[in-house]
Amino acid sequence: MTMKSNVVKLGAVIASLLSTTAFAVPKSFCSDHTCKNTMDIIDQSYWNKVTNGNPPNNEQEQYKPDAPYVNFNDSDHIITLTAKRDGVGSHPYTSGRINTYGHIGTKQFGDHGVVEAEIALPTTEGAWPAFWMMPDNTCGAWPTCGENDIMEWSGVRNNNRAYLSTEHGSSTPGADGTGKGSGNLVPTNLPQGEDLSSPHYYAMEWDLTNNDTKGTLKFYFDDVLFYTYTLQENGQATERDQAITRGFTTGQGFHPILNLAIGGNLGGSTANTPDQLSMNITKVNMSSLAATPSSCPRPDVTVDRASNGEVTLNWKPVTKANSYSVEDFSGGPMETDIQSTTFTDTTTAGNHGVLKYFVVSNCNNQDTGTTEVDIPAQETKLKF
Image 1 (spheres, rainbow, N blue to C red):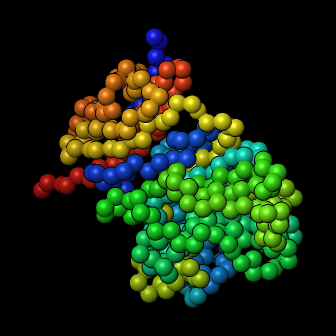
Image 2 (cartoon, rainbow, N blue to C red):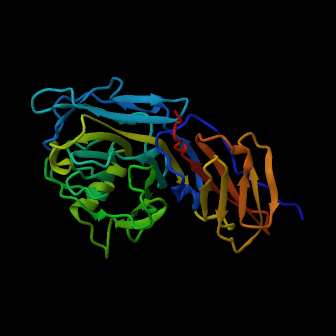
Image 3 (cartoon, one colour):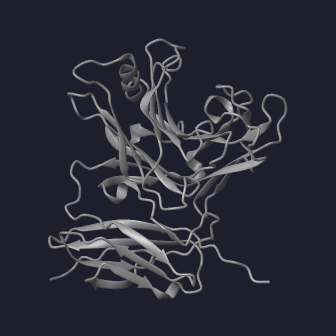
């Protein structure tokens, strides 16, 4: 029988400060769903840099488009937004905010798609980083075409909490647009000692194809569904539901926004906030979704990294798989027809940098399931 190999791609790139030696791999939405026409939009050509000297919500920052407040490292695929205490008066911080308005948004991916970002947050008192969406056309005034908040870290709540999946909308321009959502999420699937300052995936799936509900918005943390918002339940649409629906139609779809606010309604007191803090965005993807998932499940992979840099990938058995495959980033096979559920890469000995793999299950029907594995740099102790 001919096995269809797929890839476990290995790529060494620039070392990252976000590192650990034993961790669970943050999981992308597309690792378990059939994503189509996926676009990597982390390149700065997709983004607008915002200037705003007086942001709302009692925030204490002003936004400037320059480095170091907004920094695109296109070669390493990293966006860094940095807040510095170098302002004056009621806005003592200067920070960064970016959006994709006019470049790309939900309308390019149809009635069923997903937007996802991998973010390492500044988890400190006073911080209010956010990943959210606004309509291309605001329909006159906020919030008549809605607002989708995918992730907001709250410095007020702190204790490793992220305020997630809040929907805003009203039929009245200028109304408060009180949000409805899942509230605080304290992730329970994080390894001991790890928090949201390490990279994690935050995603929103929109599906406007159900005539009974008029559509749903689903929110994910590391590919775990934690909240579903229905645009019309039991035949009744609230003002908020109607506003969000308008955002996808009259509003011409929603575009992503990333910003690092300081203080304000959710940031809280800045008395103990550092003079400089950053949020690092290592992935931003948008995809349309296939009607049916792949019939070959994707492996659920964990990683162990030895002190010398060697990497061992372990995965749970996939019921339909009869073998697994591993290849490097150039397409050359590292190992094929793997019958076990583990693979050790001894070629990484002495390499403590960032690595990337794709672990693949090969099923009887020639179908495959692929899991992307991104491994941060490994901390090393300097000897003097």
